[in-house]
Image (cartoon, rainbow, N blue to C red; front, side, top):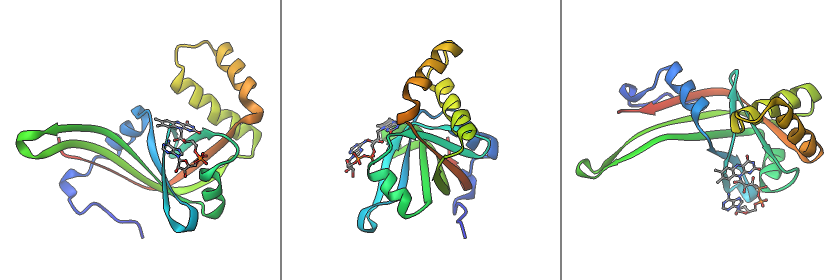
Length: 156
Ligand SMILES: Cc1cc2nc3c(=O)[nH]c(=O)nc-3n(C[C@H](O)[C@H](O)[C@H](O)COP(=O)(O)OP(=O)(O)OC[C@H]3O[C@@H](n4cnc5c(N)ncnc54)[C@H](O)[C@@H]3O)c2cc1C
């Protein structure tokens, strides 16, 4: 059901695609929003083992949309180098499709939040990260998006 790139030459390898997902600091999560308007919301994430993990507050547009439909896509722009003389941009991006859900299992939640904390605060000590996680724990909603299809595209 999922589409492949029409311009095969621009298809990134699996390794390059995963590297973009690993080094990206934010992407745009697309959900089915209110009254079928697509809701595309920027968000931080971590990529691990074929899934994307996010953290957010326990209510809002995003969560209402997820309740309505688990189907989601996520886009990360890795490079956007404008080349005026060619009237183009040398870009590199990734788009993933999959199903998103609120993580309920205690162990799964903890693993995901620890990965997020390590990605965004790599220089803090394990103790500092645990302290911050503990402080926020009750308020945190953690989302997992299991990737079903992913493509990377770039030419330069
Ligand atoms: C680089 C980046 C990283 C972020 N990382 C995170 C993260 O890790 N976790 C997290 O929870 N949030 C993050 N945010 C904020 C995120 O984009 C949302 O604002 C937030 O998650 C609330 O979403 P919501 O659907 O619950 O908002 P609601 O408050 O329910 O949204 C109500 C309405 O406000 C508008 N709106 C919401 N968010 C934005 C926005 N970002 N820009 C413009 N209009 C908006 C929309 O019209 C939306 O329908 C990040 C934003 C950026 C730009």
